[in-house]
Image (cartoon, rainbow, N blue to C red):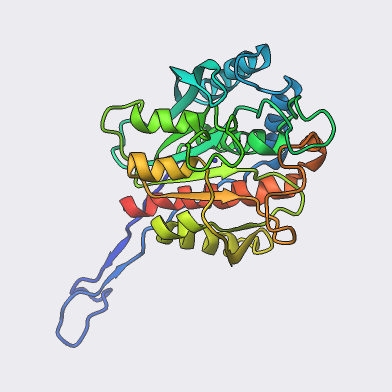
Amino acid sequence: MKKLSFFFACCLFASCSNNTTQDNNNSSTIVVKTPSLPAAPAFNSDSAYAFVKAQVDLGPRVPGTAAHAKCADYLVSKLKSYGWDTQIQNGNISTYDGKKFNLKNIIASYKPEIANRILLMSHWDTRPFADQDSINPTKPADGADDGASGVGVLLEIARQFGISKPDVGIDILLDDLEDYGKENDNGENTWALGTQYWAKNPHKPGYIAQYGILLDMVGATGATFPREGLSSEYAPYIVKTIWNKAAQLGYTNYFVQQDIHGITDDHEYIISNANIPCVDIVNWDFKIGNFAFYHHRHSDNMNVIDKNTLKAVGQTVLEVLWEEQKKKS
């Protein structure tokens, strides 16, 4: 596909002595300073880029392969090293072509004792075939943007949280088997199998979050993130919050004020099966009216990854999460 919070309330009281300021009714004047937060930390795009590259260097993370198993170990190790409670959710999954896999959803929780939660998501698996490519369509691509970029951004957010320790409850769901879907599945729900499984079997019984943010293909040069249809329908306030924050930070060339139709992606099942409003930050190419040129092709490699794009997404999401602390003041 990140802190210590301070809350100040300063009251200045005037008494009846010669050093006080009184109004005409001889009542004390009270000046209250609005609670404030220190600035959010800077999202480190070099670090996020390194996280993306580390995944790609393992090879395509196709379920059932050695690269997939090694990547799971890598992700769990990183999240634990930043102080997050981390677990792997296993499950038996059958894909549309009759194959069976052991699902590995990776779930990490920050400050699990906080009741109000926010869910961050990205899939970490790689599609088994570059079926949109004319060359070697049966072989997998690197999946640098489609999968690894969102995970890389979330790892950097996790790292920043481990350093600065904001007072916010966050869960990260790195879902598996998102990209093993059937093209034109006609409502067969062959995509986002890991999220479908988690939505029916949450890591914590009765789990609920205020909202979710999904990162999908968030690292490519020149990426544009429109307001996706399902997001706008079911989480309009969060869409507004994210896109307004991006504008404040100067990222309007990435987070564009344009709308597109709903997309079948992980957030669809978080909304429908887990009843959590969710926003999908996903790259959409308006020139071709589809996903980017490298989508499900071998050109989805490190050559498309841009640190500036990682920074725009990472800083925007980090600051939206950081400001959740204001709601507790």
